[in-house]
Length: 118
Image (cartoon, rainbow, N blue to C red; front, top):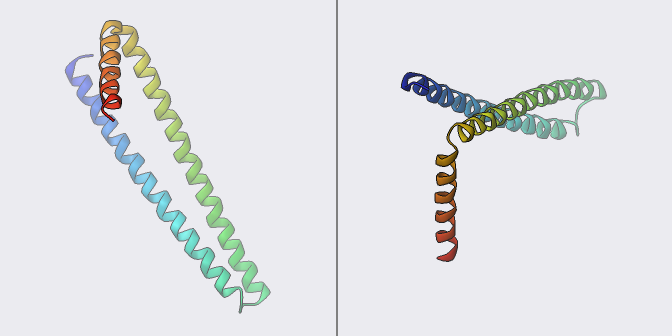
């Protein structure tokens, strides 16, 4: 791959990583909001009417459904990213078998040294 294509691929990976981080942060924030809303609903349930409880419960159900959708989207993105990494790794190993063996041996040696020092 020419250098400019490699730079582009690296830049796209960086953007993809930032998007994953943003999506993860948004999902965590949404979970926190849902937890807060649930706690508030449970607290209010002690003193609200059945109709008000039903309305609050419907709102909570909608928020939970939205959270499930966002979680599924994030999971799907992770699966796609992992598959892309697998394909790229497979391609690299097929195109550079001896370099791959050398890299694997070096990583194994580093782990071996690290484990024997403990």
